[in-house]
Image (cartoon, rainbow, N blue to C red; front, side, top):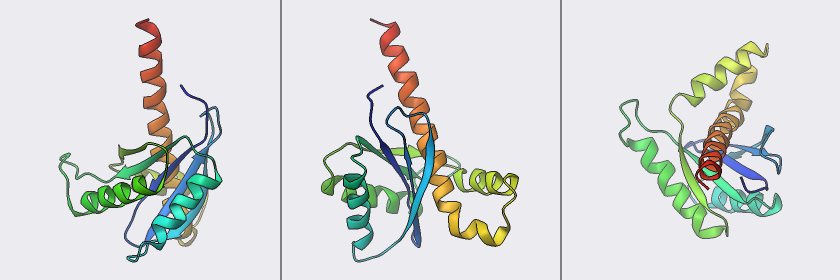
Length: 149
C-alpha cells in the first residue's frame, strides 16, 4: 500500500463530513464538516483540503440504495465526486457507503455523546467509516498483489 494521507468525504446535500488518515493508513480521524453549496464553494473547499493535507488519494461515499442501485443521493454524490476529481491531481474513488450514517450514530452513542451532539459530528464520523472501509480494501488488494508475485 502506497504511503500517504488519504481523505474521505461523506457528501450530503446540507453537510459534507471530512476525515483523513495518517500517512501509513492506520489511524482515521475526523477532520471537519463543510457546508454543502450549490455554487461550488464546497468543491473548492474540498480541493483545498486535499491540497493542504498533501493527500495521495481521495474517497467519496456513494450512498447506493440498499438494493445496490443508484438513487438520487448516489447520483448527486457521483456528480460531486466528478467535479472534485477535475480540481485535484490525485485519484478520486467512490466507496459504497450504505448504512454508514447508522453506524456513525451507533459509534457516537457508544462513545456517550448526546443525540444533540451527534448532529454536529455525525457526517465526520461517517467519513471516518468510509475511509476505514476504503483502507481495508486497499490493504486487501496490496496483500493479494504481493501474494501473486
